[in-house]
Image 1 (cartoon, rainbow, N blue to C red):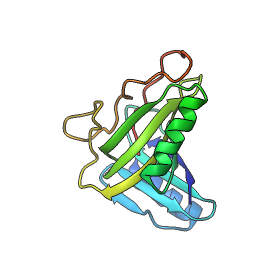
Image 2 (spheres, rainbow, N blue to C red):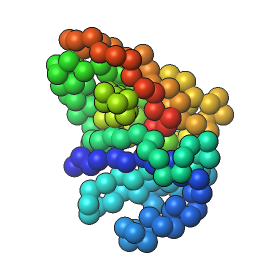
Image 3 (cartoon, helix red, strand yellow):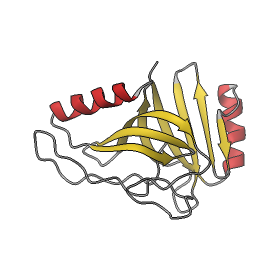
Length: 163
C-alpha cells in the first residue's frame, strides 16, 4: 500500500503531537526528540512532524509518497526520468530515524517530493549522504545532485528535512 506523506515544520513537538493525536485518533508510529510520525490508516497518510524553530511553524517541509519496496522506488525513478523530470537518488540513507531508499524530484515552484521506502529503523535522525548536520539533528539539509532526465530543467530547491 502506498500513502502520501506530508512533512510539517513545527515549533513545539509536544503540542503538535497532542493536536494530531486527537485530530486523527491515533498514537504516533514513531516518536523521538524533535520528531514524530503518524502512520494513519484512514485517510492513508504518513504525517511527519519536524521540530524546527528556524522555520515558520506549520509550514511545509516536504512531500512524499511512501511505497513498500526498493523495486517500487526504482520503478518510480525510471518513470520520472522517462517523463523528463530531474531526479536525485539516495540509497541506504539514514533519515528521520530510518534507513531509506528514495528518489527526489521538485515541482516548478521548488516543492521537494520524494518516493521512498523504509528499509530499517535507525537510532539517529541521520544526516543524509548529501549533507546535513554532523550531529544528525537535521536530516537531509540539502538535496543530492540531481540527474537530468531526458530534458533540461531549472535548479531544484532543497528540502529542509526528509522522512
